[in-house]
Image (cartoon, rainbow, N blue to C red; front, side, top):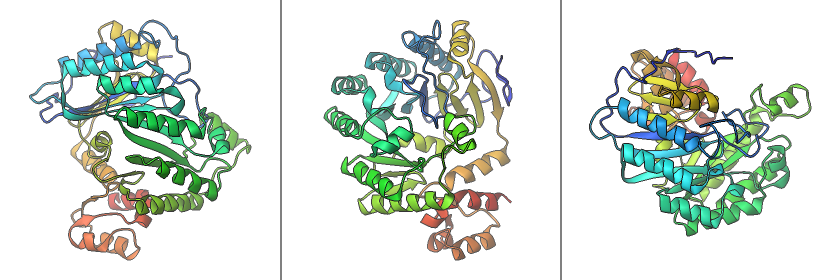
Length: 396
């Protein structure tokens, strides 16, 4: 069946209302392939590696190159240098380093990478080797984000992860030898995970001495295998209080080890924050390449068709792969700035007329009262746990 877009129809040539990019921008590259689809995964991923011309692991980079060429024709303005590039998925390292390096080279040829650009790839620990990480570094990658998720074998099994805890340690060591910055991702709230097991995973992550740590509460969507298991009562999902306790335990341990939260779910050593993700949180400009990828250019959001074969066919026909787009109103952009900005360590300016509400937030321990008095709305640890509620009240 054809995909039914939620926004307005995107033009076949990919043209935009305001294509001017003057101060640099970011690139996200979606690699949709995975060896196994995890039971909790709701991302646009596929285990079929041979979906047809332009949509298989061997020739998929050619389709990406086609979209890169299209974006080069669409975007205008001086200074279209890429500040950051992020390869996500899926598992980008299902492609070999030569293929990933070729896509990065195509981006560099089309726009140029700014000096000191941050170039990240996600990777599963079992999908890399010492040689592959060396080759990625040689190709221009500067950073790797490993899906560690847990240091406990039973929790990894519950999450359908294929690696063993020891593979994470080896992969991180290889990345260090290649000169890459390292981030590790953790997930808390897996079925059956105890607080002791979660603390063990956090401690194991800290023992790796990464530059950056992300910790996300498990989210189970209805259409996933784990969602179906929960609906049938086969697994028990954690309650919000348990998730809050695990978040607080992680924040305490990371802070004590010299990591600083800079976004609700992200901590880093000073100066090692993920610059690419900050583009999203600060409503910057980025172009998302690949099936299902989302983009934002000067207030216009657009998103690509999701299936890799449909994506490849549009590229092969010389058409934009965008399924639909929407242009945000000024009010919608302000709301989005609040929703995203409140998640950051620097917070947001106190909205006009929100003084009484901010005073209540301070009394409830949700925001830093000193920063609020100075005109900034900055969440406390308690406030981070209730960020959605704070945002809703600000919008009301």
